Length: 245
Image 1: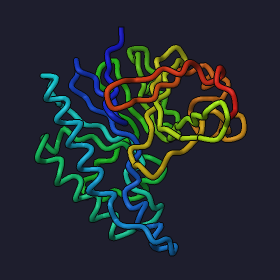
Image 2: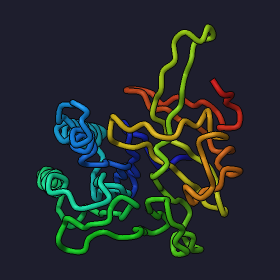
Image 3: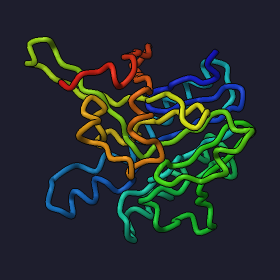
Image 4: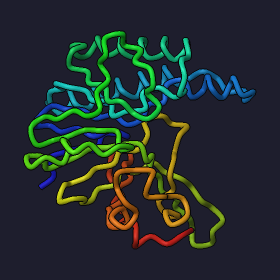
């Protein structure tokens, strides 16, 4: 029996009251603007709106939110950006309206080269009982400890392409991946940022190299693909069952 719920692009563990949020990449739109791409700055308001809806859904189900874990790549640029710092603190300020700041856990991703929280809050991993969270770009032995049953990671930004038989219409959707590695249950979250879809799992043979994540390709192929709709979660079977489209 599953002890978690997919909520939008996040995952919630009701018994522990833990909500895990995938890669935010705050500042992605700003980076596009710097490179000459004219895009409106909607990211922060969209993140806050979507998180508020998830918090409301948890409340509506009579469940309690006790901790939020951001599992890495909270910011986008690899270097210091003053706008990213503002975005980062804007999100933390917003969260204070829903949960104690000390209950917000920040995991360090490969993009998180600077800790904008000014309190050394970024962690390589977070463990709560039999549940572990890490970004997924580095393997830390502690998360594979004997007591750990489930590990939640991000980094991969999994997505799936769905196409009509005619091939005329093709659409890409963010998805969750669930499987086993080193006898642990592994759950890979999609990126939270709407404009970053990431690795197309239909084309994993061409788009994925083992050095990219802690999960080797041969193991990843056995993971089950779940796409979360507004009111339903769709099971597309294992990655190896999906053909290139």
